[in-house]
Length: 291
Image 1 (cartoon, rainbow, N blue to C red):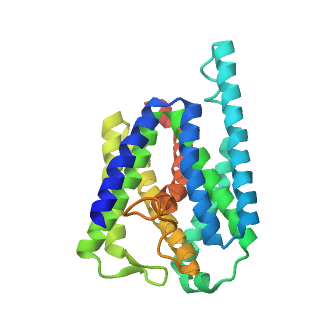
Image 2 (image 1 turned 45 degrees about the vertical axis):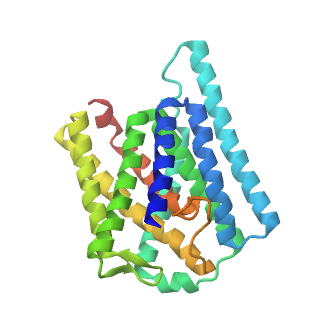
């Protein structure tokens, strides 16, 4: 199993990094959108939706992504016609959307932490789960693409590296030192030791980012705190998808990625973390742009 996980990662990660640094904004939106749509299909299965619900859900998600992409293409065309490089950067209307997913993931984290058993027995309508799926998956798509488009491929790469490193640390530290379970009702394999390994990794990544960019002490400290909080939320994003799988009594969200399960199994942390990290960058934007 571990060998399959490593091989799959060795294939996917270089492709993602290449796309991050080489594709234009629109093509990267398409690239990331394909991953989101695979995850969306798996979400429909976890929601227990019938075929008509799946078709409606996927159609609405595709149309939403297509509408935002058309806006991006319009802005790029406007830039070319006017010779301006500031049109896309200062179009911040969509930034207000980040408030919703941030509130949702904070609420989900609190509920999973304090009432896991109640969540497992809670009866939730399929329509609500599909609406929630559209909300969180669209948020994950738009805020990673905006992070890359507005702040550059390097910061987007840092975000991905942060989540990947924390996931790897949580896995191996949990395997080696894990005794106390983090959320036994939802995911018996997750341990407190694994979470601590992920958090320490986040702090190290945040400190390394500060040195790399030569941030002032204030900005560097803010990014260290943001990195740690982003990883904390990502852990509970992972647990939330585990909650959905446990309620459906399945081990994986799919089987398209050997050794990993489905796309949603690998993207759960990123889905929760992307609006959190983007919102944090927005809050420290003025200091960041001055460095």
